[in-house]
Image (tube, rainbow, N blue to C red; front, side):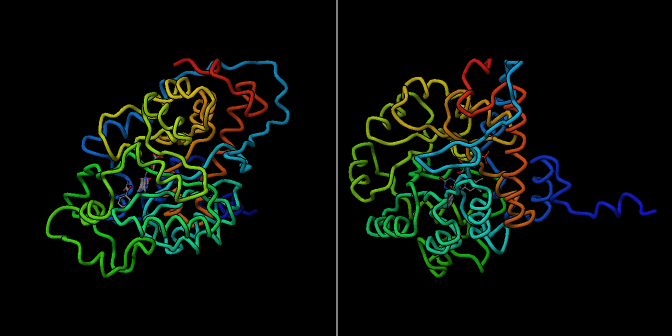
Length: 369
Ligand SMILES: Cc1cc2nc3c(=O)[nH]c(=O)nc-3n(C[C@H](O)[C@H](O)[C@H](O)COP(=O)(O)O)c2cc1C
Ligand SMILES: O=C(O)C(=O)c1ccccc1
C-alpha cells in the first residue's frame, strides 16, 4: 500500500492553504536586503499594522436563504473584465524576488484574468512587460523632475498597451523605512531601473550613509507638482488617470473634479506613519465622490473577506502589494497565480456565505464598522 505522503507529492504551492502560507514561503526565499525592502513600513509601522487591523475589526452581517449555487466573482475596471475585483498594485524591483521579475507577475495577471500595475521603477522595460500582459496592465507613474523623460515614459506606456495611468501622489519623498536605513538597502548590481536610469547612474548614487534607494529616489522625483499641474498631465496622455494615495474626502473630491479616478492607499504603510488605514478612509471617500469616478483600494488585503468588505463599501476593486511579492518570491509566475487563485476562492466563498451571488449584490449593509 502506498503511504499517503507519497500519494500527495510535496508541492509547497499547492500545499499553501492561504496567503499567510505563501508569505512564509516567499520570505524564506529572500535575503535580508530584499526582505527588509519588501516588508518594511515607515517608522514604527503603525499604519502597516492598522491596514490589517481595520479589516479585521469590521464585522459582517450575512444574509441567508439566497440562491448561491452559482456565485459569479466577475467585475470590470475602466471597462476591462476581471475574473474578480482583485488586481496587483505597483511595486518597484520585482527582480529582488525572482529572476523572471515583472514578466512573471504580468503573465500571472494575464493567466488569472486580473490586471497588473507596472511600477515606474520596474527591473524590466515597459515594452517587455506590455507584451507579456497583453493589455492586462496599468502603468504607475512617479513624475520625474525631468519632464521630457516623464513624457517619453508616458508615450511608451501607452504604446505598450497600458489601459490606464496610475499617478502616485503620496510620495514626493520616500517615507523612512528604518530597517532599510540601518542596513543601507541597495539594489544588487545585476538589477537596474531601465525605464528611468541606467545602472551606471544608479551606481553613482551616494551610498556612504543610509539607504541607497531613498537618495536615488529623492534625486529623481518631482516635488513641485500640485493640483494646478494635473491639466498638464492630462494633456500628455490619452489614458484614464487614477490618483493613487488619496486618503481624504477633500482630495477625492478634487480628484473627481479634475476628471481622475481615485485609488485609496497609504502606500502599504510605507510613507506617513500613523496615517489612517485605507479601509477606514474608504467610506468618506465613497460618500464624497458620489459615483463620479471609480474608486480602488490597497493596503493589507490578504483575505477574501477583506476584498468583500472593501467592495461592499464601494471599492470597484482591491489591489495586492506585498501579497503578490510573496507569491513571486515563493515561485515566480505560478506563485503569483496561486496568490490570485487562493484569494479569489476565498472571495467566492465569502460572497456565498454572505448571500451574494453577484459582485453587484455586495452593499454597505453587509458591513458593520
Ligand atoms: C516593496 C514595495 C514597493 C513598492 N513600490 C511602489 C511603487 O513603485 N509605486 C507605487 O505607487 N507604490 C509602490 N508600493 C506601494 C504599493 O503599490 C501598495 O500601495 C501597497 O503595497 C499596498 O499595501 P500591501 O502591501 O499591504 O498590499 C510599493 C510597496 C511595496 C511593499
Ligand atoms: O519602496 C517604495 O514604496 C517605493 O514606492 C519606491 C519605488 C521606487 C524607488 C524607491 C521606492
